[in-house]
Image 1: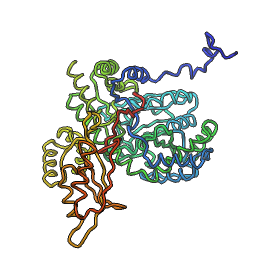
Image 2 (image 1 turned 90 degrees about the vertical axis):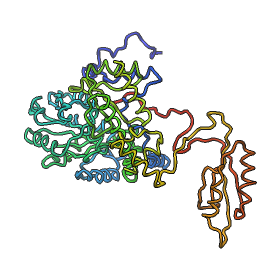
Image 3 (image 1 turned 135 degrees about the horizontal axis):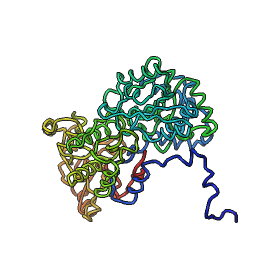
Image 4 (image 1 turned 45 degrees about the horizontal axis):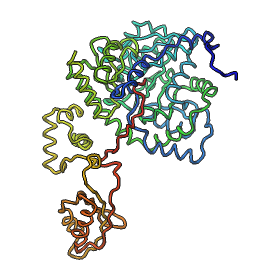
Length: 391
Length: 160
């Protein structure tokens, strides 16, 4: 037959070094543990607990009914890019939809394309930590070397020129920024960003700024590093529809930056994805056109949960930096975070993610997602309290 | 604070004052005082539970009844509404646009009891010209709550 399973695959030792050595996500183990039980309340989920706005879903359905199932332009539907350009003006950003925007298959693809377009083998990419788990492997796959820059709870998990210097980031080629941040829920103020911007200009660092949680900022609003003088020309902004518009499964993101970088990313994109999913692009177009109220509603709801969760942790005596963006709290568990998370899951059926998964500075913390209904959230917080009392 | 406070109570009236205070970042005393004020002002009309009666096998039958009325110089909608609203069997009463004037929700112990109530108590109101009764066969959502034990959370337990 020729396709019967064999004892040893011919691929084993012939995988590329990059693929063979790429480490598995640190979350995987907890995922498996959590899946084994059916009484688990998961606070480990990094996605909204609501579906995409109905208007966006209807637009997706309608696009299918009309048979819009072909490729779009490599850069994405022009109409969508125009809307995206308009959307970005709320953060003081101005981009030409023709040359400076690229619609991608999720923000993750935009990050990957940016790293592949900017990083040569041996190039150093500074990544502040704790942060989203994909940047490191992304740098690795692009052939670069990641330089971890730990941030601290004492600095509200904000990046500072001092910690950049201490990590040796003057020598880096690229800096990856993720604010509002997953997993800490930290945001950066204009003043804090201004100092990092000065550092980047002084040491000639390019910036990939992942702003996927920009619309979920609770106090003071979001600031983009690209809006600072002299930064637009050295920054690639990444954003998308997964978090604010609850469209995770539709996989739609975008990148905005100077024409040279967007053009380079578009060339890589056209040989891999060709174009982002057409159905999702129509959904996104409608989301930007008519679903702003729903985003506001979601943000208000997350805001309430944020305050609830933060205040519960404080009352329990768990030191917790007050998150100002995204939908995560990052309390200090005062001990080995992995052991804590495992015992919490085992004894109380509450799944959280150990902070160390997100890199340096995450040890001893837990990522707690409050993108979970209020009733479940209350039960989960009560269980955590019981767990703490029993120790 | 009122709007946010009302939103919390509307989604779960049993939320404790302490929990509301945590969610709204206010002092519990301020929350308690605001609730009292809203109750006194009649903004909060009352608190009730949304119950899936089928789940407890209680013999409660519900019906939506359309009412057509004919107004005259002496009688307006308010007066008719006032009269119908007094019946304890009537759980809700709405003046609506369209082919009929009022939509009322009636609860009774059996279909027979509901029918008897409509024909003996409601229909005889002089201004009512027609009633159409729709018995509720199944409830899928009520008071904002989706019924049935469907776990719709199909997200991964842990994700990046």
